[in-house]
Length: 144
Image (cartoon, rainbow, N blue to C red; front, side, top):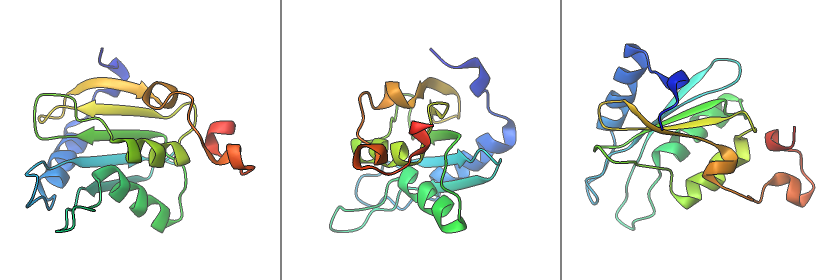
Protein backbone atom coordinates (compact mmCIF):
# COMPACT_ATOMS: atom_id res chain seq x y z
CA UNK A 1 0.00 0.00 0.00
CA UNK A 2 1.51 3.36 -0.96
CA UNK A 3 2.36 5.76 1.84
CA UNK A 4 0.23 8.88 1.33
CA UNK A 5 2.93 11.00 2.95
CA UNK A 6 5.32 9.91 0.19
CA UNK A 7 3.63 11.93 -2.53
CA UNK A 8 6.36 13.39 -4.70
CA UNK A 9 6.40 16.93 -5.92
CA UNK A 10 6.95 17.43 -9.64
CA UNK A 11 10.52 18.66 -9.20
CA UNK A 12 11.68 15.62 -7.23
CA UNK A 13 9.88 13.29 -9.63
CA UNK A 14 11.64 14.95 -12.59
CA UNK A 15 15.04 14.75 -10.86
CA UNK A 16 14.56 11.06 -10.08
CA UNK A 17 13.54 10.22 -13.62
CA UNK A 18 16.43 12.25 -15.09
CA UNK A 19 18.93 10.62 -12.73
CA UNK A 20 17.61 7.14 -13.57
CA UNK A 21 17.80 7.94 -17.27
CA UNK A 22 21.51 8.86 -16.90
CA UNK A 23 22.35 5.41 -15.49
CA UNK A 24 25.15 3.56 -17.26
CA UNK A 25 23.62 0.13 -17.89
CA UNK A 26 25.08 -1.37 -21.10
CA UNK A 27 24.77 -4.95 -19.77
CA UNK A 28 21.45 -5.21 -17.94
CA UNK A 29 19.57 -2.39 -19.66
CA UNK A 30 17.94 -1.88 -16.24
CA UNK A 31 18.41 1.78 -15.18
CA UNK A 32 17.72 2.67 -11.55
CA UNK A 33 17.79 6.03 -9.82
CA UNK A 34 17.80 6.98 -6.16
CA UNK A 35 17.34 10.15 -4.17
CA UNK A 36 17.89 10.43 -0.46
CA UNK A 37 17.26 13.20 2.00
CA UNK A 38 19.13 13.70 5.25
CA UNK A 39 17.40 14.81 8.45
CA UNK A 40 18.88 18.28 7.77
CA UNK A 41 17.04 18.44 4.43
CA UNK A 42 20.00 17.89 2.09
CA UNK A 43 19.31 15.85 -1.06
CA UNK A 44 21.64 13.41 -2.82
CA UNK A 45 21.03 11.60 -6.09
CA UNK A 46 22.55 8.44 -7.53
CA UNK A 47 22.14 6.04 -10.43
CA UNK A 48 23.46 2.59 -11.14
CA UNK A 49 26.77 2.31 -12.99
CA UNK A 50 27.63 -1.07 -14.49
CA UNK A 51 31.09 -2.26 -15.49
CA UNK A 52 32.28 -5.21 -17.55
CA UNK A 53 33.12 -7.44 -14.57
CA UNK A 54 29.50 -7.11 -13.32
CA UNK A 55 30.54 -5.50 -10.04
CA UNK A 56 28.85 -2.21 -10.70
CA UNK A 57 27.46 0.37 -8.32
CA UNK A 58 23.78 0.38 -7.44
CA UNK A 59 21.78 3.62 -7.46
CA UNK A 60 21.26 3.51 -3.69
CA UNK A 61 24.97 2.99 -3.07
CA UNK A 62 25.75 5.86 -5.44
CA UNK A 63 23.44 8.24 -3.53
CA UNK A 64 24.82 7.07 -0.18
CA UNK A 65 28.39 7.61 -1.40
CA UNK A 66 27.49 11.16 -2.44
CA UNK A 67 25.94 11.78 0.99
CA UNK A 68 28.94 10.44 2.90
CA UNK A 69 31.35 12.34 0.63
CA UNK A 70 29.57 15.56 1.60
CA UNK A 71 30.02 14.85 5.30
CA UNK A 72 26.53 13.60 6.15
CA UNK A 73 25.86 10.16 7.58
CA UNK A 74 22.15 9.73 8.16
CA UNK A 75 19.26 8.96 5.81
CA UNK A 76 15.82 10.34 6.64
CA UNK A 77 14.08 9.32 3.42
CA UNK A 78 15.12 7.31 0.38
CA UNK A 79 13.37 7.02 -2.99
CA UNK A 80 14.20 4.30 -5.52
CA UNK A 81 12.91 4.43 -9.10
CA UNK A 82 13.27 1.64 -11.62
CA UNK A 83 12.40 1.40 -15.31
CA UNK A 84 9.06 -0.40 -15.16
CA UNK A 85 5.70 -0.69 -13.48
CA UNK A 86 6.83 -3.30 -10.95
CA UNK A 87 8.65 -2.92 -7.64
CA UNK A 88 12.38 -2.27 -7.98
CA UNK A 89 13.34 -2.74 -4.35
CA UNK A 90 16.90 -2.36 -3.06
CA UNK A 91 19.06 -5.48 -3.43
CA UNK A 92 20.35 -7.26 -0.33
CA UNK A 93 23.69 -5.43 -0.41
CA UNK A 94 21.92 -2.07 -0.65
CA UNK A 95 19.51 -2.98 2.15
CA UNK A 96 22.51 -3.53 4.41
CA UNK A 97 24.14 -0.33 3.15
CA UNK A 98 20.95 1.66 3.81
CA UNK A 99 20.74 0.06 7.26
CA UNK A 100 24.18 1.45 8.12
CA UNK A 101 22.84 5.01 7.79
CA UNK A 102 19.16 4.54 8.69
CA UNK A 103 17.23 5.24 11.86
CA UNK A 104 13.94 3.69 12.97
CA UNK A 105 12.23 6.72 11.42
CA UNK A 106 13.87 6.29 7.98
CA UNK A 107 11.35 5.68 5.20
CA UNK A 108 12.22 3.90 1.94
CA UNK A 109 9.83 4.48 -0.97
CA UNK A 110 9.86 2.37 -4.14
CA UNK A 111 8.47 4.05 -7.23
CA UNK A 112 7.30 2.93 -10.64
CA UNK A 113 8.88 4.32 -13.82
CA UNK A 114 6.63 7.39 -13.75
CA UNK A 115 7.57 8.25 -10.15
CA UNK A 116 4.46 7.06 -8.37
CA UNK A 117 4.96 5.38 -4.99
CA UNK A 118 4.24 1.66 -5.21
CA UNK A 119 5.30 0.66 -1.70
CA UNK A 120 6.90 2.22 1.38
CA UNK A 121 9.02 0.58 4.04
CA UNK A 122 10.64 1.30 7.34
CA UNK A 123 14.03 -0.28 7.98
CA UNK A 124 12.69 -3.14 10.09
CA UNK A 125 10.32 -4.12 7.28
CA UNK A 126 12.97 -3.78 4.57
CA UNK A 127 15.63 -5.74 6.51
CA UNK A 128 14.13 -7.50 9.53
CA UNK A 129 16.34 -8.52 12.45
CA UNK A 130 19.29 -6.82 10.81
CA UNK A 131 22.93 -6.76 11.85
CA UNK A 132 24.33 -3.27 12.29
CA UNK A 133 27.10 -1.21 13.87
CA UNK A 134 25.66 -1.66 17.37
CA UNK A 135 26.21 -5.41 17.02
CA UNK A 136 29.96 -4.76 17.01
CA UNK A 137 29.96 -2.09 19.70
CA UNK A 138 29.63 0.99 17.48
CA UNK A 139 26.92 3.62 17.63
CA UNK A 140 24.29 3.65 14.91
CA UNK A 141 21.33 5.86 14.00
CA UNK A 142 19.20 2.72 14.44
CA UNK A 143 20.20 2.42 18.09
CA UNK A 144 18.84 5.87 18.94
